[in-house]
Length: 440
Ligand code: CS2
Image 1 (cartoon, rainbow, N blue to C red):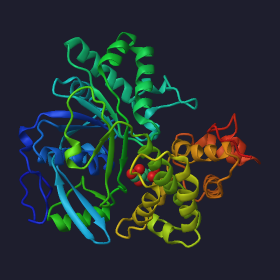
Image 2 (cartoon, rainbow, N blue to C red):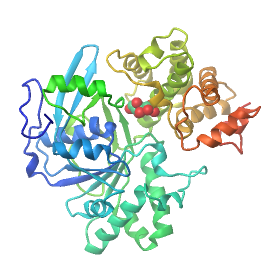
Image 3 (tube, protein in one colour):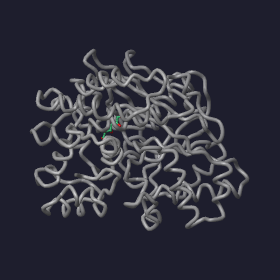
Image 4 (cartoon, protein in one colour):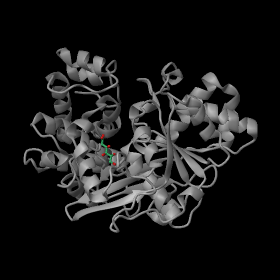
């Protein structure tokens, strides 16, 4: 039997505390993977549980029909399993109403963005989904392609403007530095190239707040689905598995109404930068180092790599000695306590977070995770031995042939590491990832 609104569930499973059928869709979310389902959708579910109305989510997959096939037959319902050493907890999320596949039904996506009830379009499309070229500017050719978020958002905005509807809040929930400002700039570049008549309307009516989003959500496995089916008593093809920890810091700059996410644990602040930078350089920086160093030493999971006595001190020093000093902490933000908490989260034995999943798309992740820290220290005449060890491990990973290289720049990376000076070919002025940091 398959999960649906009609299936009886064990009393231990928490269910949505509001009338799902009575909610209008208020959010269109592009890139509805496991992360969105375990994070933003859960906060929105909580907000509706606390009394907010009409914040149903229309999920969009740009290309793959997988999530639509998982969720639509279940009326959008799915469960989130929270796992820690202390035990596991299961709850049902009702915020997602349906999932559209842009490659199959682009008109429905555009109509959802243009709907008068929609106020927010949010994104988890991963770093590469923003379609930036090597210089950081929008890759205009790619942005005309089939998996371009910009095409759909712009087409929805054309209809909104024509109908005299208000502008939108475009909410990036990806691990980019200054994700709000980056999305605003790229969206403008797209409009100026292809819909110049919309640019002024976009500037005047739309907002792109920055966010820091944090929750470790490994890809769901068949084994996870089987365990959850045993707990639920029915099959849930859309189930996600995550840790207990969750954090969401959002710049309070919206074009119109929004859910009261601050009433259910999110932090609405004036400046997200200190949180975002700390998260990218400590958490994500350590994650990528764990991935490449860990895989090189034969580990499969994050909890195994952090338990390795040859790796743990490198990760500790990467976070405490190299990344933390580069951050201007916000009042009350204690980076030493943050690093302690991260070490515990990495060690979570109940979560099998695959290193190979984190190793994906290194070219898109490494600049904001490692290179900004390296540049900061280089300007002060200092070196970062732990980050340099991580870079060596990345180069060994790219050279090794033991794992497939899943990266939009895979060919250029392979070519760069085949030569005698991989460092310069990767990071030099004409390298694959030119940065302010220069290898010495
Ligand atoms: C990870 C992130 O896959 C990765 O690159 O570093 O997905 C990480 O788990 C999240 O950002 C945690 O919030």
